[in-house]
Image 1 (spheres, rainbow, N blue to C red):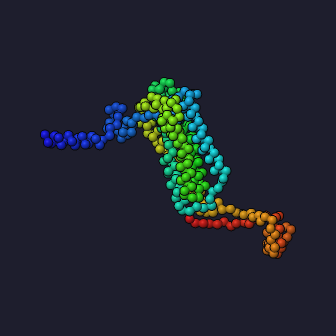
Image 2: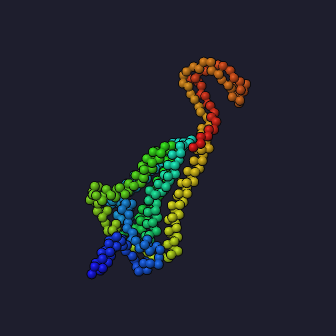
Image 3: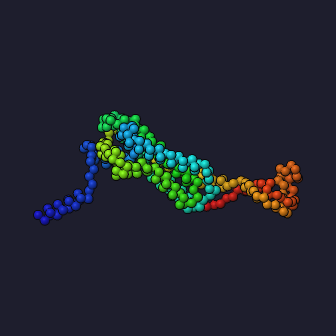
Length: 316
């Protein structure tokens, strides 16, 4: 009796610490290293992007979702245009800034979830399967929503890349990256606020429809197709990382070699008169002998001095 009670206690303790996952069929158990991943079910993301295909066109949730998308795209496009107009690449940066730039590449790729989410949804949910479980949902609207996610993600990454190239302080990098990430998260924030009935009952009902509670089971696929799709999703991450890394290496190399240093500086002195100025005429002078040095009075109002600056190398 004591041993039985002891065994029972140990069994209850063991089961209380275990977490069980549902499986689709018996073949998923054992013999397949990916069975724990493939057995998990999928639900639609709780995002305003989902309203674009779960709600009818012209409805309040659909229009609200389009407004969130337009707001996010507008903010990111305006930020990109403003940064590109500046064309302000620092001539060189401190070591701390350079380390923050490369760390921010990893941070941005980890924070960005719209691209993998859109690709994963397109991979997991095919047209026949979507029409089978949700006959009222248009597959074209579903694809449109996923494409919007993916393009939003790449617009975010392009903005981050421009910010990293033009940054010259560590705190500027982190502030700008977090600000861009906040803009990208407006769809999740809008869904959460709608779910709390802050924006009205119509939007609150849209967040509690059966679409967001239905479990989407994994479709049967060949091992070759599963492997190709899985490798494609991984390749997207590595390609994005390689592009970021290549661009930053080129910019860093040019900064350390003095590529971005200015070649000349133009100085305007205002209305002052410069007495007893020493002037050396340039080698291409036609009016006066080239290289001639003389003393004269300069009226700065009509004077624009251009000084050539030699390349300057500043090691990190």
